[in-house]
Amino acid sequence: MVSTLSKISTQHVIKISTVDYFANQRAIHLVRHAVFVCEQFIPADLEIDRYDPVSQHVLALFEGHAVGTGRLTPDGRIGRVAVAKHLRNQGIGRCVMEELLEVARQHRHHEVVLAAQCHAIPFYERLGFYQEGHVFKELGIKHVTMRRTLV
Image 1 (tube, rainbow, N blue to C red):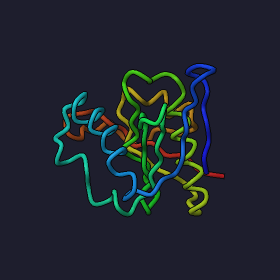
Image 2 (image 1 turned 135 degrees about the vertical axis):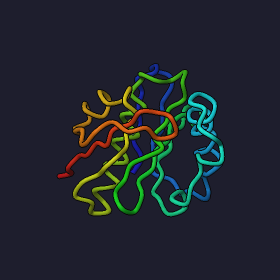
Image 3 (image 1 turned 45 degrees about the vertical axis):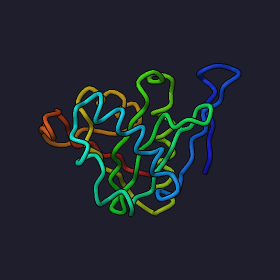
Image 4 (image 1 turned 30 degrees about the horizontal axis):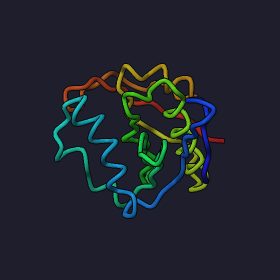
């Protein structure tokens, strides 16, 4: 599925699509490295893991450049959602998430789970997720488990 977003301006369109990991891993990891390693100081060797090759990946492109990404693991966990800093609050993250939710439906998941960084809780709540359990730290960053039932 390919969706587009034209909120940034009338001349520029963001293309959001489910992509093949192996053909797009460089673009996927450029976005994730910028967000998780450079901004949040997560060790680079922990940013890529064993779930990448087996997950469904979504990529957002703006003027041919990767600006957003996220993944869905085979067991229905959404993760590694990232948007380039200079393009946040433009609706890209929402579109990446909507594409991931559609992929989850296509794979017949009845619910999805994610570990949300605490600052992003309102973002995920607007997408229909609810909090479950207590706050926990992962790599020094506060997170909470969130779920959403799919229809």
